[in-house]
Image (tube, rainbow, N blue to C red; front, top):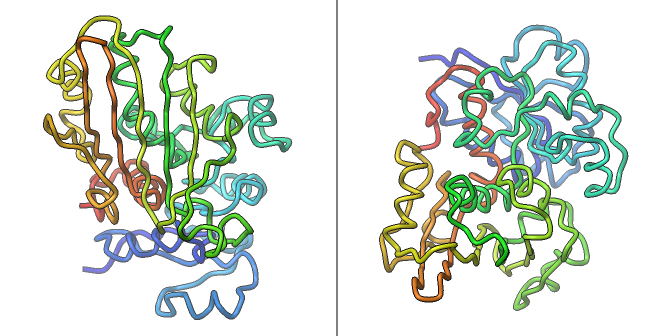
Length: 336
């Protein structure tokens, strides 16, 4: 059966863009179309799928009515420039950058250290965490795909915040570790092989631009949250260890019940049985978020361990999940 819909991908040579291509190639109803927005290097040309259709970025491509949706797997400054043009052409957009994740220009300037010239789109964009914003995502023309760290953190924290079980005065500590692909494909001194291999380092301490996504989605106050991102010497995957205290003494079963209440019908969130914890190997190359729980009822301490693949549930897989919702397709198509 021929595919009925076409999805454009801008930024298809990056890690997340390449994952988008792989996922969409196995989609039963959507065909990936590579949108060339800049000249490709020789290395990039050898990396690409030569059998896929390509179109140049421009007004003719945007307005010919051939694309059902367009993905932007681009740096936030590129998305900020190009996304409005796609919207003006009547296209639905799923943006994987951070360009439209926050709600105000002031907040964006603070965390991204750059000006934002489209406050109207900041206000309009739907934050594409399907487990919480599924219904509004279905009606959106602009979906802002969440960051990888906040995806795991919000899926772990929000149920506990919604149910009001935490001792908020004790604070929340989120110790987050990511594979180096989370820094993007463009090399730097910090992500060079010689810097990463046999090493382990923290970065952007107290200033990480994913922090406001946690604050907005899980309703944690900034003074309550300590978030530290660290770079693992591996290619992909995120493991977050989150430390909280509960207001009352709670067992594993008590905490697990909170998660099962929230996620009992969610296809991509898995709660581990008592005594088991997730690892990168349980989630890499999948769109799952795995959550494990340890409790100490006597001291009211709870440790949550969450794992995702930063390139799939943390980027391309979640983007396809959002596309399926926007286009009225089965949410799990091409992801299970």
